[in-house]
Image 1 (tube, helix red, strand yellow):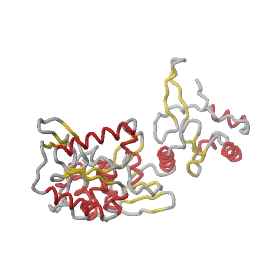
Image 2 (cartoon, helix red, strand yellow; image 1 turned 60 degrees about the horizontal axis):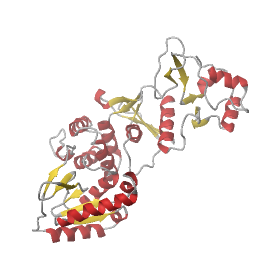
Image 3 (cartoon, helix red, strand yellow; image 1 turned 90 degrees about the vertical axis):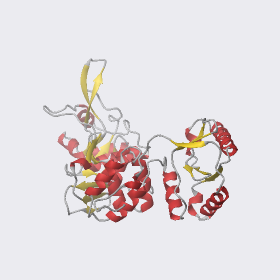
Image 4 (cartoon, one colour; image 1 turned 90 degrees about the horizontal axis):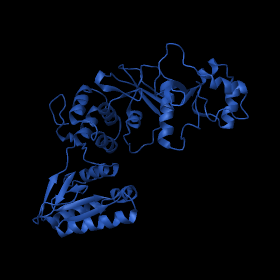
Length: 375
């Protein structure tokens, strides 16, 4: 049974063009695959059979093989029936939400993979996109790919090909795309991006991979360009940071010479009852980063603000000093001065109740490298 594409047969497109798109049939002996997918297999509950539906990326070469002329393709683009994602690759807007930036970028990346040599592996910031790891700052929209060789990398306006040996453990598959593993992606970014940016992505990755995997990957990267910078960044990464803002706060505290706070700690009252789990815990001082996202994500904003106020009141009743900051505070030294004053005031005054480590998160502070030195 043929499943026609919605939104293709529009008045300004010829009947030949519409029929060519509707006559998709999987060649004998071919297999289905997902990303970068030209075909997927779908259940047809009505017919009780398996049907094949052409979705996602539409390469110009595929249209040409089916007799669709360049003029008809241009007419389809003008009418909005198809939208160019990359030169020679299109998408059907009726089946894809192009208003979502991440979806659009993934399509652009799939198009780049489709147009590249099959032995290239998605890597660096593109791999972070595939894995769902946020980058900061996220300004490079080029497709980053890695070739498994020692030399011959090249960079263009829309694609960067890195040349670097790939261990079998460095490559995985996500939705049909060959992509560097989370650990290898962290090492690649740490070798090529500033300390703060590397820590932000590494903290996020450590919530989904282990410090041991990262240490092994780092050891295999011995001698790579940027490896010393990567060692410093990876030694500082901590999966306890739950957002980019918290990761940047950690870097801010470190650069201003403040003591490293504990992360993921529960605060208990005198009877051992849970009171709260703050972002940062110092001796006698609680630090909270207000990125404002939590007021949007956890229900009605007014209710969240009231609950946060009640929680803070309970913490203060246990004689904890509380300091809050936002993105703007991370741009000046005033926050560091405020925290130093709070820490000084809290000296010799232990809060009531107790604290305990919450859960198990990866911390790379003890990662060691091949030469036996602390990273």
